[in-house]
Image (cartoon, rainbow over all chains, first blue to last red; front, side, top):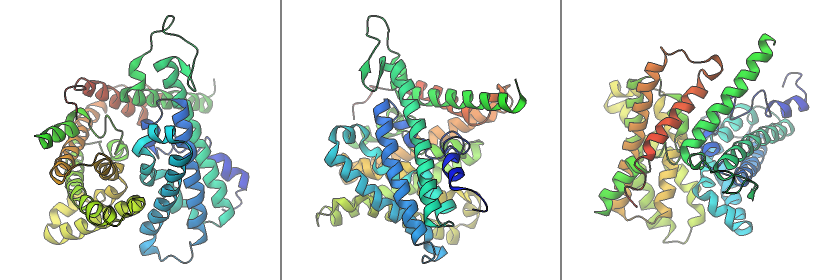
Length: 204
Length: 192
């Protein structure tokens, strides 16, 4: 944390170290539940909650846990918070919980969360850890929502469930809702972002 | 008969990687060569089969019996982590050459979401023991197949002239998208 301000810790997760686009972490949920913007948002927020909570917890106990058993400990903390998030979703938003299906429990295996626990929270005090979790989680949610929006617009002519292009003016590209569309959209999105990055580096 | 259908469905029609997006990390990370793809696929198949059996036993004889299904995620992940550790120790003692060729891939299997996904699907769909076994082996075979195909394509891709912005991860994702399109041809063949 040498000289790095809290603001920088927060901002890095949004763009420069964006978990999905730059670090290639948490790809499975990013691809699986981004078939509509609202699903992407729900998944992103659930991940954000687990990420912040587990970062806080790991940072609190970082001096107590022996390093040989740290990974199992982190996984158990994460699994406990995921159970919490899953039960809350089931009780409060049963429809979204059904749409996300087994991908909510699979947050346990999201390498983003374990990665942040291992590389950041286990080495930093509690406040920077929370900020790091917030930044990474919001960056992750952002990518999921953008992916979901692109796929929803092309796949069903709607945004957040609101249909603005009816069947009579636009034939939905069914492939965008199906698995193949997820891979293609994310691939193109990364390509575009690399292209912008290259332009910036080399000048116009 | 259902077991055979479940095996085929998990291996081809509902391929774990290309239809459920499980195990994307190793799929993108270690599929640069056909040989490493095969090793990773076989190790994962092995762990998947064992996991299917053991989590089924835990789920039926402990969690459901004592009405503790809310502990599923925690127990499953611990079972998987300890299983991977056990397999690693066993292979190191029994066959050092295999251990060397698998190397870092073995511990990485713990964080492969295909394994936890398998356990969750198995309990969600209430499979019987034989069906679970078929599901585990089928899922592993499907994963290996996707890995090997991807490895083969990426070996060729190294000689291709890919646009600069698409090099690395983006082109791999695009290729995976086309593979998923191809696998869509199997959709609807089986209804399990």
